[in-house]
Length: 102
Image 1 (tube, rainbow, N blue to C red):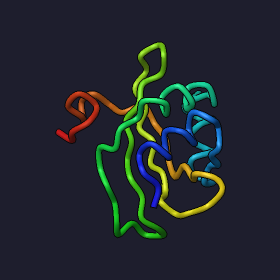
Image 2: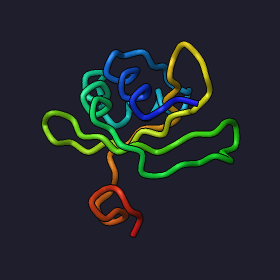
Image 3: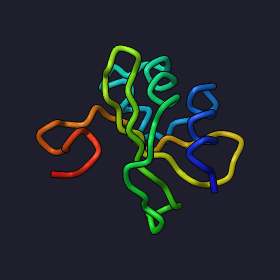
């Protein structure tokens, strides 16, 4: 299982890949690789999903250098690349401080 430090390192280094779903979302939501690297450097785990459908995963909150909040759901599967399952900018109407569900 990846630790938060390992996850941050992989995101900051660009050692990640997208699920098909995440790739579509990155394009639709205008999220760049730079945004992901910046948000990943200081990301924190806000939810864990040990029984997720395909593999254990977690939801991260990180901020770009410009202050854009991003949620990234990543898989805990051991592999050379960290898998991003989905990624989006959280809606403040649904989240307190972007980290707790309303």
